[in-house]
Length: 177
Image (cartoon, rainbow, N blue to C red; front, top):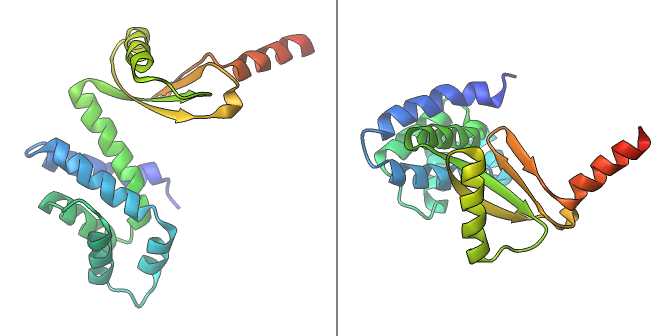
């Protein structure tokens, strides 16, 4: 089967072209909500059932999504369902985010930390990371106790790892050499 990214790209680009003409922020919220529902294994099992019609799948998703869906999101959802690509929807949403971020000059940053980060610390950290990466960042934090201390930041395909775990791994390699 083709890579999910390859399947998702045309949908994401078409969605971006249509959404750019309207309220982009609203479409982002709706697509995120639909993608979260489409990622559910039980829903995919229902959608893959040959007895389930496209209309039934659409109704179930629309009922589960807490955000009211606009025409753009409904059209994408019906197209994806009709083409049997519901499993690709989370990747479509991810690629759509990349396109929206490129347009606004902002990148998503995933910050992995061993401990919770206070809001004041987060502001200073984001400012430092923006200088380091040379662009505005939308940062989200995920707690990973196995890092022991420090942080690991992922921005697109760039990774900045200042965690204790990474330093210990470096020391292990150096001692083994």
